[in-house]
Length: 66
Length: 332
Ligand code: SF4
Ligand SMILES: [Zn+2]
Ligand SMILES: [Zn+2]
Image (cartoon, rainbow over all chains, first blue to last red):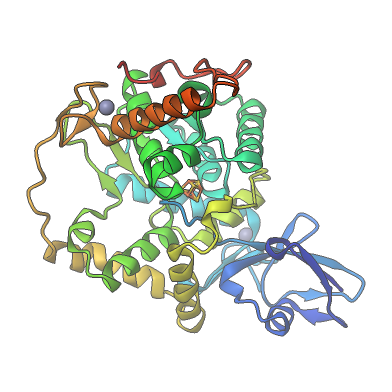
């Protein structure tokens, strides 16, 4: 599957049909820090993503403002 | 995972509450959390006119949206900070939201009105950008709110923001700051508006989820000056803890409000009086914002005298940008 990592402005391939949780683990991303979107739908961590699908990892951590 | 209410497919899991919702019931949950924060802390009534500080990011657009959905009379206020593409893009998103929803928006244009960006304020006065920026925002929100008859300013600070600030204050035992950290800061002077944070019970992940479920197009890219900020490091640390033990952020911040804050007493603040230049509340004679802008303008004059070839910077608002009438530069 294709994974668009929005805040790092990069795309990676993750092999096979996987659960969201496993994808995040493989990429070393803390699930607390992102939302996972397929199309316009949010996915929970137990959702399955097919090999031919694309998901977006959207960062939720913002700020640094004074 | 299934929705707790309807058993349909869940889209948002809320681990700190051991629950999950479908999009429809997540919106319901979210609105209830906000309504509860507003009522419990007596932030707003339906008779108040509230000015929402909108940056174009997820939190502030979500706040503006949910306040309007809850029936509050909420006007947005956007400040153009003059930070390159970040400011242009965030202004576009804010204006697009206002137009699509028929929401009222005030825009204050700092470069248009003061002849320079917040970064230039910072450079001219030896501050870091975020300090000049934070000072400008606090000042302008208060001033514009007052001049347009708003009694309350609402900001999109969420549970993660507040927990990160708290962690920073604890790590350095900033007891004065600890005493002043609260979801509501009531006006302490006739020229000071009350400030409220209706998202203090809501995690950052949830405000982002709300924005996405509601189809709000917000700016995802961050201000370039936020790179390497301490508060982002604190958020990362808290998220590590949260991942291992859901509810950590909530127990840190809510616990502080309930049990920690009563233990740190604020020293009696110096009495506030009117700035002799602009009339805004200050502890000194001239407020920090007037001192900063006057020093920066002076620097610019000196620089221009040295390099007569450079084109003059217009102090007039940029064409096409409706400036809020209240934010005129202070009289000199
Ligand atoms: S990161 Fe700093 S300069 Fe950028 S908007 Fe936030 S406070 Fe202002
Ligand atoms: Zn449901
Ligand atoms: Zn002043």
